[in-house]
Amino acid sequence: MKKDCSTTVEGPRTGHLVIIGGKENRKSDMVILERFVALAGGPDANIFVLTAASDKHDEMWSLYENAFTSLGVRQVTTSNIKNREDACGEAIAARISEADGIFMTGGDQKRLMALIGGTRIDHAMHSALRQRGACIGGTSAGASAMSEHMLFNGSNDLLPQKGSVHLGAGLGLVRRVIIDQHFSERQRLGRLLSAVAQNPYLLGAGIDENTALIVRPGQSIEVIGDGAVTLIDGREMLSNFTEVKNSETLELADVRLHLLPAGVSYDLASFTQEPDKDETTVPLSPGLGDAIAAVTSWCGLYRESTEQKTAGESL
Image 1 (cartoon, rainbow, N blue to C red):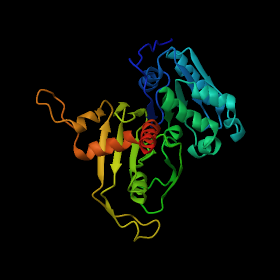
Image 2: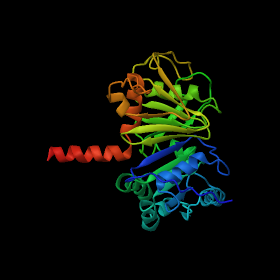
Image 3: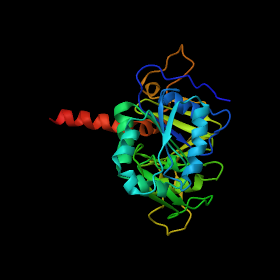
């Protein structure tokens, strides 16, 4: 039965990121994929499914072609990217740069970056986000690859340990956030704490399955789905990371942890405005406001506009 996903975002489209913790519902009650379609422009949106993280292109394509068409999308396409020569091709890059929605499937984030990192496809996604206000989604491996510092390997020890995680270069759609997926289901708090201890400047974002963190650059975040997003802020953290040996349990003090369940949304305007006694909402706390500012303000779209402004002022 085809579902009509006719709800679209009113007004000029601005780029969004839909960062999914994996195992989003693809057959019924597709809240996350339905929102992705709406942010991309609704049933008339041109959606490109990027399966490069997986070595099972046909299987992944079939899953998402069926899901998006059941949501009423009339134009959904893909391409089987087997090597970097494919990823550097002008034809595929042009299709991606013209897409209203680009969706990266799960698989292996190392494989994804090895195939597309630094290629025309990589640049086309940034161009679509910045210049056309496209919506970029990613699930599981596709979610982890959105960050500039990508978590690609790590143990699932319950306690944080030195040297237990490894970071590599990601796509840089989010710059100051390390993204981990399948978070609660695979008990990954320890490994995300390990990553933040190794890089206290970076925030950790752990996203549960069938849960999405929606980022509107420079403006807001929203959590939808079934689970929660865990934000870890270690910028004021004290640790013994430099003193202990590899594989030793870390001592971490003054780590800030924010648990954001599905259904919540935060706008940066509420962080800068004074409380309104007539409203039921109150401004963000300074700690949460700072964390959300870091998540939203370092996306590719915001970075591009900031760099252009800076360049203009320096002339």
